[in-house]
Amino acid sequence: MGSKPYSPQEMMVAVASREIRDGDLVFVGMRLPILAYAVARNSHAPSARGLFEVGLMRDQPAETFLGTMGDPPNVVGALWATRMSNAMALMAQGQVDLGFIGGAEVDRFGNLNTSYIGPPGRPQVKLPGSGGGADIAILSRRWVTLMNHERRRLVERVSFVTSPGHGDGTPGWRKRNGLLGGGPVAIITTLCVLRFPELGGEAYLASVHPGHTVDDVRRETGWDLNVADDVSETSAPTEAELAAIRKFDPEGFWTVTKE
Amino acid sequence: MAQAVERFVPDGCSVAMGVALEPLIPFAAGHEMIRQGRRDLELIGPISDALFDQLIGAGCVRRITAAWVGNVSEGLGHCYRRACEQGIPRPIEVHDHSNFSISLALWAAAWSVPSLPARTLLGSGILHTNPGLHAGDGLVQVDAVRPDVAVVHVQRADALGRAHAWGPLGIAEEAGLAADRIVITCEDLVDPSVTLSDPNRILFPETKVAAVVHEPGGAHPSPVQGHFKRDHAFYRDYAKRSRAVEGYHAWLDEWVVQVPDRAAYMSRLDVDALRVKRSRPSVPVDYGDG
Image (cartoon, rainbow over all chains, first blue to last red):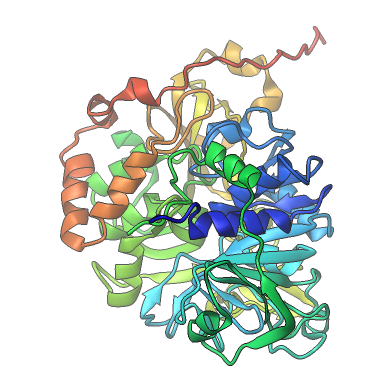
């Protein structure tokens, strides 16, 4: 971590937690979003609820570290332990306000690839697959993705669309194609926050994390990036946010940069 | 276990495993399939946390029908990558799903209908890589997936096939109902008076259950609610060692091939450190006397 008081992952978690509104039902997912949910719940979103596709609903975050959403501490004190199809039912009804999805590649329209780099018949890289990602992308009311900011990850067009964002970027693409949810609202990276216009379309640079510049972001982005007129500096993680992150990831399993 | 796998999981069959997602993964059953040199299996599941990767690396698998194959806390599945990218140790076919669509595919089989409509996967490339998904009229038709056998690990079961599982259930119920037969592996083998005291908690109809195997620790390194924590370090070690094919085979030798059975496997672990220590029983329900 060098001399910095927080890691890039901690920055991402803090920003992600601010996307959670009080009262939201959040399809939480894995890794950093689990921490983001815990941070939000302990600060500005005390009445948010979390839904996990393994078949769980909770209010209070689990008391100890989670390696996966199915770890025993996530079940203790749950509001509902059930089957996956019941969690999916709530999402299909439009009751999930916010979802988080991770990915290997994202493009300027927010489409995510977690399946294949190169042709599916003989890929250069076989990625693990959708999991619940495509379901969240299509059915949750809005969603956010978190990613390391690298030129090979933020690409002009993804080679395979696992989880559709705003499709070909034309206004109303999702509605025309029958996708129920509103699509991606933000891409949170290790360098910045990209956002999308309300009706979909192309991502633009909304804020740059402290210590980085617009040029840094441009250099690491695989398309000619639009920059908001009022582009700002992302607020650094607060003491309270950092304390919450370190409480739920005491050994830095998710939030300390690894080799 | 050896007998159950020999009789009910033959070469070429389709097997649903890991159907509760991260918890209750029947690793002991999967390892027995590897030891018996099973070939040409179709593995069916939602996400698979390391078990499918291990079977793929051992050359047991011809097709994956699943939403995700990797290592949940560590990321990529290295054997899955090698098989898809380089055909090592053999090429495999992949029928991609999402978690929602594999659940629906199993419900379709459970209800004996050719397909079920869904509002998921519209706009996803998965529609083009899986021949069992068809888009039309703003819906996706998800074709039924009918496993020959579902192998499910639970906390307790009786010898007649009544299984009690608790914690999140993932797609366990639809996988069991869709399958031709079910093999149960359990932490505790209990008297029928225990399972029948709470029939709401019985996971499957006993008519579907072909075998019950008493296999304590049979889900390690996955968690078992009320019994075992997830062994994160074990998953990390597997991810590291399986990165290269030689490392994978050394791992497989150490933990599967040279291990006669689950009891021997468990004796190599610090089992006490993995046990859940504090008891938190639920309040019993009262069914009355009729």
